[in-house]
Image (cartoon, rainbow, N blue to C red; front, top):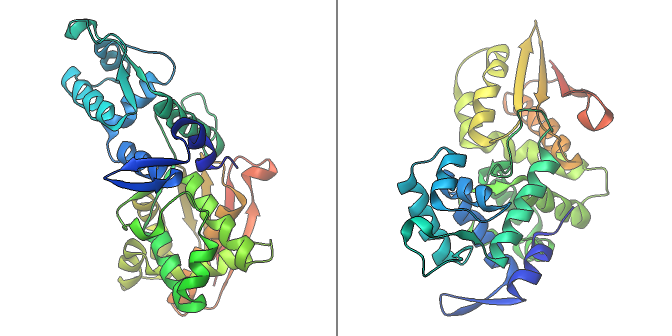
Length: 304
């Protein structure tokens, strides 16, 4: 796995100045990533400039955005130090924009993340796409760990994480790389390499997600609850496709169009087990297929 900090070290130096205070490289990286990820316009502009400098009109044509949106995004990204005008003396229509060294490092990370977690299909998204998860479940994991293990143990486990955990909000989006990094740090600190710790952690944190809790509170049969899982998925993940089929006291969850890291397989199984526990239903969750094993999708069979 590529470390987010390693990518930024060469582009920004070990310490950057921001808002009058010293911040470590991972703070700047996470801040920049969040800034770009929070705007679809900025994401498309960064993606368009990743391969070569372009005029605003060229960016607009490639990204299917209005020139006014491109211009505003270029201005915002320039102020952030991710984009620069290469022909400052030219008139507005002749201004050529390209990524700065820091912007190039961020684009390289985004490209790697897309290749690592997204299946390479003919119509797969380009460099402008980054697989992301909503941060709410990670917040829940951290809160749970602080209660179970203590704040100091959690700080020590996550001291090298590329994300500043205290700045997370449930509506923020984390890259899949950052989530995998989070899981690996916790597994190395508290687990035994089997990912059973991660599986157990998410089995408790998953059902507490507002989108999952909302579905759990509905007084509907477990089969109907399982069929609503794709709706929840689309609220929490921006990549991959979940297909659910039910029959009797059995539900099959199939994950397509993604390449899950080993820790993500533990997330899926843990959350499905956690939903059974939250419903106070005895059952089993069995993984029967895996993309990393050569199948075209991952599959989990839940029986109760």
